[in-house]
Image (cartoon, rainbow, N blue to C red):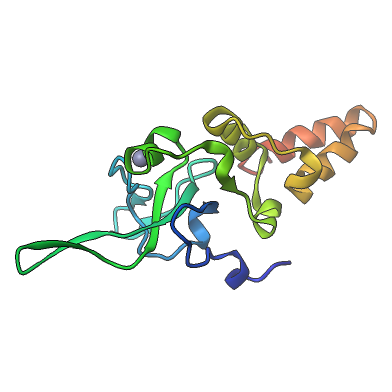
Length: 164
Ligand SMILES: [Zn+2]
């Protein structure tokens, strides 16, 4: 098991793009830097909640946020910015963005579910082979080679809620 510090995104460099999962990002991350849409949901008690997969996927890069000082617009040092997993969102701020530039960290792969792979394929045209994605998927694959009963269990595993 990878520890959480390895899973939290590093301080990114400008021009570098990395895939992340919201639950491992800084808690203060709330909005898409491209479209301004909220990345998290606010519960009745005011707590921010990470949405269910695959809506917890984010694309992270670094940008110099503009600020004003004595009437002059300046740019800060590069800091991480977070986008929805959508090409349009990243392109809104980074016109030269290309989906294949997104790095998927090895430590993140065990946490990626089939729905994440689907989203990555749909939105970014990235395909991740099962073996490289997650232990969960591998188990499913191995189960698939078994008999009918095993296939039933596979369907249960694919459901996000435990069925009883
Ligand atoms: Zn957006």
